[in-house]
Image (cartoon, rainbow, N blue to C red):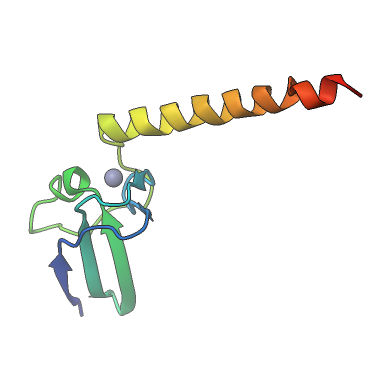
Length: 100
Ligand SMILES: [Zn+2]
């Protein structure tokens, strides 16, 4: 037995999309489904793009993390990786370390 409801709240903190495992940025409107699917309580957040890839008939038949990230999210993730790599390099060439 399955039942539930979909809402479209605005993210008050960052969430993870259950379909593509990409980040759902804070302040973004996302799709949230809460209910019981196959006897298990679910509370899933998804990008609007990811959620819109479902038809009503097979709406929640998917494998978590198997979806493709929307392009803008893939870009966001790549940007973050670049930034954290830069931050790491920055720490290693920190002028404070040069004095030792
Ligand atoms: Zn997604």
